[in-house]
Image (cartoon, rainbow, N blue to C red; front, side):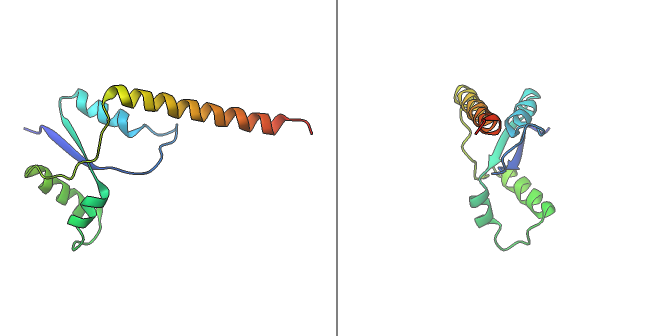
Length: 107
């Protein structure tokens, strides 16, 4: 029976058009699975001798998950995550406001 899943953490900034990684993790956790996000730098050190491909990455993550040695990334608690989301949204609103002011300011 599958009880946990692992994924390599990405530094990609998510746009409003794509679902946030946290939303994907929450959906997986809602189904009763444990989500482990692997630290990409530590994972790279473990997989340095292997050719880089999605298949090799998936196999390595499965092996590490099987023996419970996935180099995990920090995941903040839900309360801190919610505060970070609010801060990100506020930053976006401030940037949008500034952009609109600059665009429509009469010189």
